[in-house]
Every structure is written in C-alpha cells, then in structure tokens.
Image 1 (cartoon, helix red, strand yellow):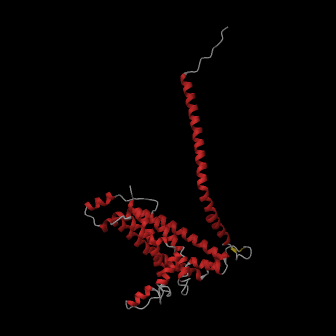
Image 2: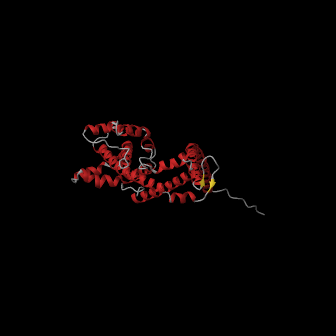
Image 3: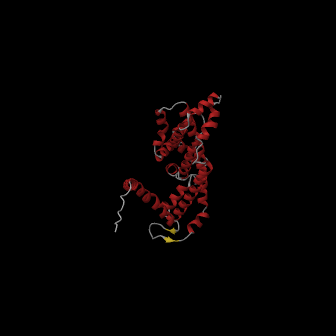
Amino acid sequence: MTVASSSPPSRLSLRGQERAGTEQRTRRARARENGGDGRLAAVFIAPALLGFTVFLLWPTLRGIYLSFTRFNLLTPAEWVGPDNYIRMVHDPIFWESLKVTVEYVVINIGVQTVAALAVAVLLQRLTQSAVLRGIVLTPYLMSNVVAGVVWLWILDTQLGIGNQIIGALGFDHIPFLADEHWAIPTIALINVWRHVGYTALLLFAGLMAIPNDMYEAARVDGASEWRMFWRITLPLLRPVLAVVLIMTVIGSFQVFDTVAVTTMGGPANATNVLQYYIYGAAFGRFQFGYASAMSVALLLVLSAITFLQYRLTRAGQSDLG
C-alpha cells in the first residue's frame, strides 16, 4: 500500500501569490491615500460650499418660491400661482425698464469693449510696465457708489466742474444727469470709466498667451500692425474676449448703485433700469412676490443670453494649436 505525497508549490505560483499580495497592499494604500485626500478636499471645499448654499442657492430657491406668492413681510406668504408673472407681462413699466436696461447694456458693452481692447493692445505692443497697469486699474478700485457721487458733482448742471469748463469754452451747460436723452448714456460712460481698466487687464492677460513668433513671422511677410491685429490678435483672443463679454453683459444687466446715487430712476423714468424697478417694488412698495417674479425673469433672460453668447462666440474653443 503506497501513500501519495503532495508535491511542493512551484516557484512561479509562489511569485504569483507574492505579486498578488503586493498589488492588493498597493491598492489598499492608494485607497487610504485617496480617502485622506477626499477628506482633506472636503475640508477645503466646505466653507465655499456653505457660502454658496447660504448666500446663493437658498436665496435663489426662496426667490423662485416667493415669485408664486403674495408676500409683504407683514403677513405670511400667500400662494397665488402665476398671477405675478401675468401681471409682469401686462406691466408697461416693466417693459420700459427692460428697454432702458438694454439701451444701457448696448452703450456700456460697446464702448467698454472697444476701449478695453485698445488699451490692452497698447499695453502689449508699446509697454508692459506694471506701473501703467496699476494706473489703468485705479478707477476699478473705487466703489460704484463713490464713483457715482464723484461724477454727480463733476457733471452737476450748475456747479459741476465739467459744466464749468463747458461754459468757459463758450457752450451752454449740458444737463448730463437731468435730461432724459443724456441720462442713460452718461451713466453708461461713468461705468465704462470705472470698469474699462479691469476689462483691459483681462484682455491683456489673453494677449500675453499669444506667441510672439506669430507676430515676428507676420512682420517678415510685411504685415502692418492693423493687419496683424485683424489676422492674428483678434482671432486668437476670441475665447478670452468671449468670456469677458459674458461677464460684462451679466454685470451690465445688474446695474443698480450708479443709478441709485445719481438719478434715482429719473428723470421721468428715463433711467429706471430693471434692477432699480425691482428694488422699488420690493423695498418701496413691499411687493416682494412681484419683485421676485421680475428677478426670476431677469435670471432667465441672463441665462438665455449667456448660453447664446457662449455658443455663438465658441468660448470653449481656442485657435491656438
């Protein structure tokens, strides 16, 4: 009677087991590291997420809810369904405010974009001095309220130094902020003066990403500065310019403080922009439900404009290869 003896495991099988054990320990170590990184990331993200939830997400959801109610702070909100939106559609002042806002946006964006692009190109082509960049940015460091008050004094029809200079040159004083035809263009140019430096620096950063080799090759081919601007600078700057336009359009539709400290919506509602009308409905007449409905409408308008701008300008694509 013979007894079968088991053969010892081969070296290959032992090596395979060792390799499998090593891989398993490596996976466990990576899992522990990833778990630690995830917890650390959560700690850093938590303050921003809390601020986003408390100051943006919750007010937005609350505003959408209030837009379907009648609410005046003194009594509980009363559900009225789409009544506020129906009222808004038939409100001529709302449509006039929207028209005034669009007029302001067109003037502000048109002048600011051209001026900022010119300043950015000059900074790139002529000098890259940090001192000049600081000087260009100086007006942006001033708040809109302070800028509005300063220009209100400068442009005062009787005592403003601006009209004093105009009078000294032999011209009649111009009621910049007291005439319905001058008011919106004046407010738009005040905000252009304040924001153009910041916009120019954003575009300047985009210009710095364009390789100098392209300009040198164009000069060798005999291209002028104007031709290089249209053939090289503008096409390669398109993604940055598109993002800047999206940001400035959103900010322009939300104009409020300059109007509040200069014209207060006058004269004759000529500067009653949509944000100022919403403010008056909420805190002047305590119609928070109706004001919320107009705010939601503004949110939808800005979302649609942003989407169209992003698609039409191809902001997510770059021509730099």
